[in-house]
Structures are given as C-alpha cells and as structure tokens.
Image (cartoon, rainbow over the protein chains, first blue to last red):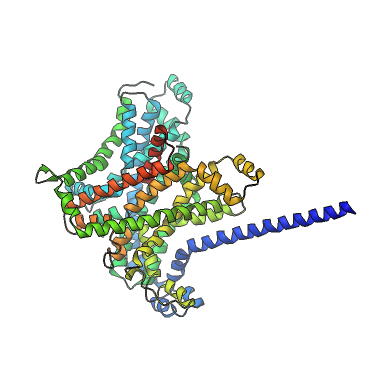
Length: 296
Length: 296
C-alpha cells in the first residue's frame, strides 16, 4: 500500500517535471522563432514588396491587412527596371571584377608574409609582427579621408586601382594565416627541405594544400567586405562605368526616391549573392574570425 | 629556420602596402591636425573646440554609443544563449540570425528607411493596428537617432553573436554539469558561471563594437544627413563633411584624432573593467581588439 502510494507520487512528480521540461522547450522554440521572424522580416518584406507596383504598395499600407504585406498582383517589372535601366548587371560585374583581382593578390601577399613569420627566424621578427598587429588596430574608417587625398595624388580616383590596391595587404589576414600556418608540423617542412624541396615548393606543395580552409576564410572575407563596401567606393568610384553595386543602390536611393519597388528589388538582388555564398561557407567564416577572439 | 633574405623578401610586399595605405595616411592625419602654416600648433584643436557644432556632435556620438553598445551586446548574448545548445534545429536558427550580417549597410539603410516611411511605411502600418498614430521616425528629431540604433542593431547583432557563441561553446561542458548537480538555476548558472568565464570574449566584443559604432556614419550620410536639426550629426559624419563638403582637411584631421583618442580611452576603461589585471592578458586582449578590422 505504502509503496504503491510512493511510486504513484513519484510518477506524478516525474510527469510534472516532464511537463515543465516540454513547456520550457516549447517556450525556447517560440522565442527562437520570434527572433528569427524579427531578423528575417525586413528581408522577407523587401522580397514581397519587390514583386508589386508602387501604387499597390502605397494603397494597401493603411489600414493594416493581409495585402499590406502580400501582393495582390505579382509583377516583375521592378526587376526588369533594375536589371536593364538602372544598370545592376554592370555594377555587379564591376564589383566581381574588383573582387576577382583582389582575392588572389591578397591571399598570396598576406600568406607569404605569414609564412615568413612561422617558418623563419630573423632579426626584428617580433618588432615586425607587432607592426602588423598595430596596423590592423587602426580602424579603416579613420584613415579614409587622408587615404583619399593620397589616392588622388596617384591619379587613381575614379579608376579601379583605387578599389583594388589599398585593400590587398591586411594585418588581420596575415594574423589569421599565421595562426593556421603555425599548426602545420615543422617536421613536415624540415623533411621536405632535406628531400631537396625549394622554399617555393614547400609553400605551394605543403602549406597551401594543408591550409585550404583559411584560404577560403580569407577569400570569403574579401568577398563580403568588397561586395558590401560603401564608403570607400563612394569616394573613389563614382563614375558609372566602374561603380560598384552599393554605389548603384545608393544612387537609386538618392535620385529615384519614389521608385520604392525598384529599391526593394535592388536590395533583394544585391543581398542574394553574398548570402548564397555565405550560407554554405559560414563555418569557415565563423571559425576563422572567432578563433583569435576566443583562444587569444 | 635560418635564412638571410627570404623572410624579408616575403614580408616586403605586405609591409610596403600597409605602410603606404595605412601608416602613411595616419601620419598625414596627425600632421594635418597639428601643423598650422608650417608650424607645430594646437590651433586646429582650439578652433574645433570653440565650435558649438563640435560639442553637439560629441553629445550625439556619445548618446548613440551609450545606448547602442550595451544594447547590442545584451541582445547578441541572449541570441547566442538561445542557439548555442544542441536543441534540434538550433543550427538553422543560428544561420538565420547570421543573415543580416551578410546584408550591406547600404541595403540595410535603404530597406529600413523605406519601412520607416511616414506615409506608406510598413512600421506605421503595424503601429496602426494598435491605434498608434503615424510616427515621423527619420524625420523626427527625437526619433531619428533611435531609428539608426534599431537599424544598426538589426544588422550587427548576428555578427557579435558569432563571437559570443564561440565563447559559450568554449566553456567546458563539465562546468555546466557541476552547476546542475549543485542545483543552480539556469539564470544563476549564466550569471555566475558563463559570463565570468567569458570575460575575454566580452572584452573583445565590447572594444570592437564600440570602435565600429563610434566610427559609423553611413546611415547618417545616406538618410538623415545629420538631421533633423543635427540630431544624428555624429562626429565622424562631421569629419566626413569637413573633408568633402567644406574642403577643410585640417578640421577633419582634428576631429578624427579626437575621436580616436576617445576610442582609445574607452577601450582602456573597458580593459580595466573587464580584463584580468595582468600585463600579458592585456596584451592578448589588445591583439583580440585588433581583430575588429573585419568590419571595416
């Protein structure tokens, strides 16, 4: 009798605990979903708004109804305008061209410098490394104005040089490469040297293949940075022939203030490419940038 | 390994590029700020400090940062807690939370400024459900700055979450188990165990976040132009206007250098508040602080 009672109350307690656990879990999902909704809302909204006419957007704004968000009539007119009249393809090509040139140079120049730090002992090594670390503590925005003056002296304003060259060397990338290269066992390099491999061979046959992930991180960082960069191109690439996606969008925003659906379409198109690239490769990005912050 | 010239040759390209495009512009800033008519002088600072505009901009800058930095860190941390456990589907939510980071500031500003429109903006449509009259948002001098805070937090929180999540994951799971055995509640565990163990990551995020928000001015440049009535006129935007609208590089240099000084001072305060009072740790933290370059 007593034991039966006990086990019954134990079962009740267990049920209560389980119920609490499920409740907490349900709440957890609910909050996650809510945050996701807030996060995604501006983009989803842009997506739907880009597929309707400006008249419709305006007409259904008030009072709030289903059609405030969802189109009555789907139209791709705004995409046609963005792709043909507003010059999105040209701007996208310009941006991709800059990125395509910058990535190999940046990867090579920053990674060989990192290679020097991890493989060799030389006079002034620590001082030089400190130099690179300090260089990337200087926020890029702070040097924008004097950098513009200098680039202007070179005669690079409104040329692609100004977009490509200043962004190549980066203390941050060097730092990331160095962290990765440091994990390659030195015995491997030594034995390759004994077998008669040149330093060039050691670098291209051992270091690069072993450190592919960090090259992906570096390339992705450049891609995201350049594709989304706004302030610098605004100063040095205003000419229509070389202007980048962000500048094109800013021009649309400033000059065609009434073309709402076109702005939304431009936003959707310009977000699509970095997101499509970022999502499958996010692991590399996150690991790359957080490695230093967490482990020091 | 020893080799006389190889390391220097490998470092040369990166070194030269950084000297030209980073160090030299900083040197120019200092030179322009401190030299008046060929003489070393504090004249530029005297001129700037005598302006009413400067103090108003400083006030706006500080107001913006005092709200934005803690807000973003708290939200990012809560988001990180939400998705850092192994609950089913957390990975998908994590990815969703990252997405705004892949959106450029231009697009973020464009989409949010359309959403914040007085007439026909979706946010006013939402507010109408609750019977709230249409708000001015970017056109209201009391609201414009806070609209920028919302916009930046939407874009930024996912990014800072990456670091905080890496920090949470870095904590040994036995720590949680021990807390559970001791009967500590979840909030208690987070407050007394997780947060203290993540001091370093918090320090990094604090410093990097402050630095990126202090120098932010794209939203002001794109939507508000510092207005209405200078309510969003941050120092960096004033510096930008100095250089490109008033062609007054000396004033620009003086403002930027004051801004950098404030930044260094705030970072130091954060080191003392959050860092371990240990020289080596401070050095490591400085290295971490340096990684903020990603955002630029």
